Length: 105
Image 1 (cartoon, rainbow, N blue to C red):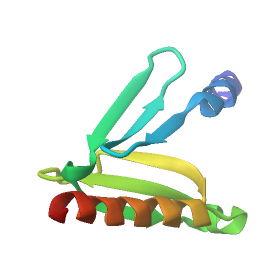
Image 2 (cartoon, rainbow, N blue to C red):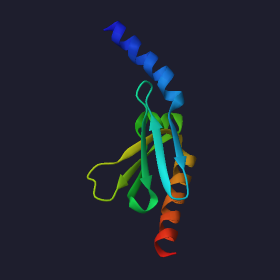
Image 3 (cartoon, rainbow, N blue to C red):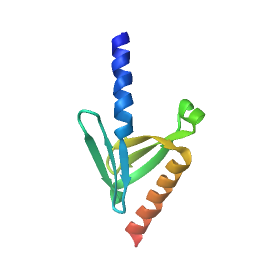
């Protein structure tokens, strides 16, 4: 059990710093994974809903997670964890504003 806990801690120690997101004009993408890299890309026009989530521990340290929901999906497409609360709110507002401009503009 102690060995498993050590492996999990080491994985997070090395994997967390290489997680990244890219917010571009046409899409939002998120890359994660230590041994097997996974990139999820969501076009702005396909974003149905975006939520800023804050659990009790995240509230204590001033962090938040963004959950991105795509059109036609029952659950969120991907989640960007560990953002500062103000930054998460700015990203959410940017996506909502930019999505509206692309749709009507």
